[in-house]
Image (cartoon, rainbow, N blue to C red; front, side):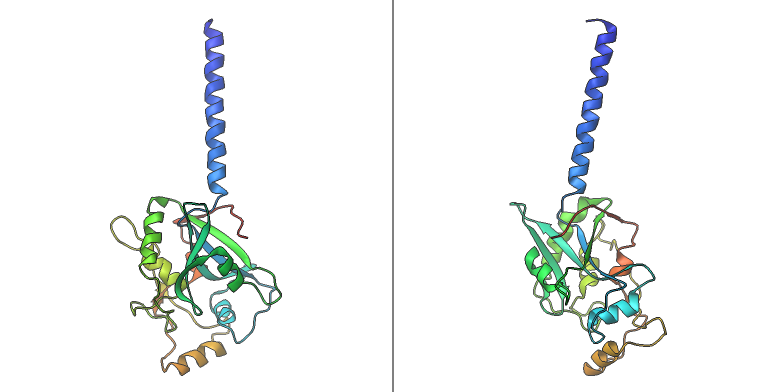
Length: 227
């Protein structure tokens, strides 16, 4: 075999390997993985019930962007390739349920689905461990007080306490929570809720929210369709 023929074969082999690697990467990016975070988004032009928590969250954490993220859930893919959801909601508390239950719960009043944004840790070697840690909290009540370390969890708080680095520190930091709308007032939902439970609105108490969490530099968007 001539030197030129040998070099051509080497180039062809390297090119083939590169193509296969790119194909695998694309397939991995387009497939839901254990530990992915699914954010539930409401378009800015969609009208929510003014008395709902979703509307209150939108008023408090929404931005001028076209999408307001009102919820975040943890994905788990079982050995059969079936997707499951672990999240904290007012209806179920901290629960693990099939994807179908998740989709039903967040179906909008007009029968359509919200916009789902899937994010993945850039360094996802702790993702599977984070999911197992989240399972420890199954059965825990929803945190209607929105307070840290009270034995209950709201959606992004569950993610925060579950996703830890190798040294045990939290990947997602806390920040002062905001319950006020753009006019600097508390939506009726929050005033009624906290009056009902006899607690002051925890304005500026350290916490998390889906909108802020989705912008964390440790996450990257992945092209996964939720259906």
